[in-house]
Length: 321
Image (cartoon, rainbow, N blue to C red; front, top):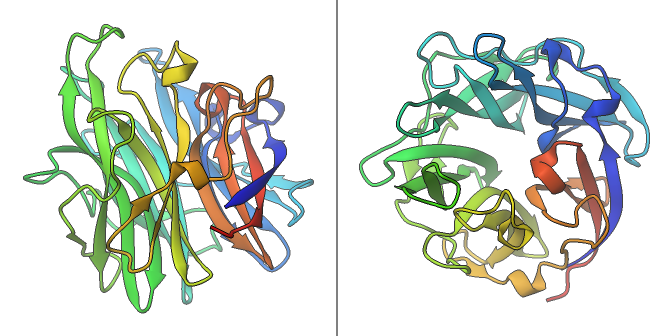
């Protein structure tokens, strides 16, 4: 794989966002229309009750050259959960899927904890207005913690291949105490589930992407595409701790491929993309999203500071392994 970076294309600090949100445009993910592309992302509103942030979903509509902004969402895209719900304190990310005559959304809901910072689960919603807003089908998640995936289920990415729904997601395996960050650090891996209807899921029950850094490597936000008779996955990975201050421990993009959607070969050396010194993505690359647009393949991603100042895009120039 060989990518050509086209630069940063959206900076949330330059626009008025709905829900009193400021900065951050994290995990950009697309919904295609005939003459434009809608890019959903998670942004942040400061909670006046405690000064902490609430993650909310917004979007920007762009032309298919990704140079001109047509519209930025001016109202709430999807409501956060009520008191005690799995998504009470945020939704990050949202994955949107056209499914015949429906537009589905798979959300990652966040709720704060006491002994650790957060718990997450995957929610489900549908849109009846062409993706402007989404309504949840219930207050609970459709995929959550289980016996061997005890916490931090989320970052779900869904595709329909050969009549079956496939979900790639992350799940927590442990929390680490006494780290250099002075707070428990979470470790999470990428898993896989299948479904006949997109709502009831059966987990494969194993880590599908091998570790590169060490057993505490954190793997996040898988995105998958079928191209030239092979399945390709991009994701991001980092060290469990120290990643906020040390650029060498921060997020980078990983790559894996599969011929059967079951067995994945990790091949970061052939990802075809890396940080650019002196640029907006010099210290970090994270939260990738790969997609087709007309006759080209693109990759959206966040750069430094986890997408505080927006996201950029790259176009695939070659996919010869």
